[in-house]
Image (cartoon, rainbow, N blue to C red; front, side, top):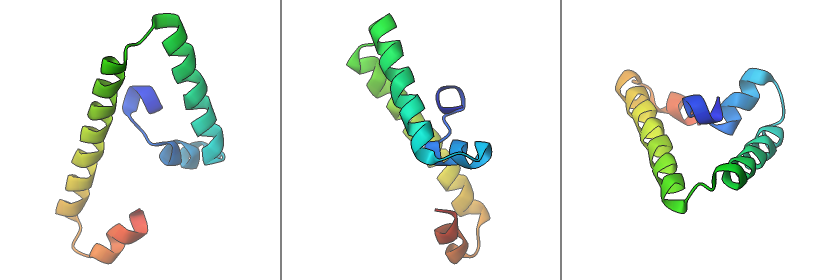
Length: 77
């Protein structure tokens, strides 16, 4: 979910009903494992992070467009 759909650790933890730290540790382990196996270069990692940030920006813009009550946004984050 983290790599394929760009979900945050918090969202995954909520959906799976587990501790967020568990998800963070799993992601950290998988990143380490991928890096060791495939020798991902820092530039590729930066591009992946850019893609995730763009996805987050798109979700936030969509939320801002559909929300009339900004207090609701504060509760979302």
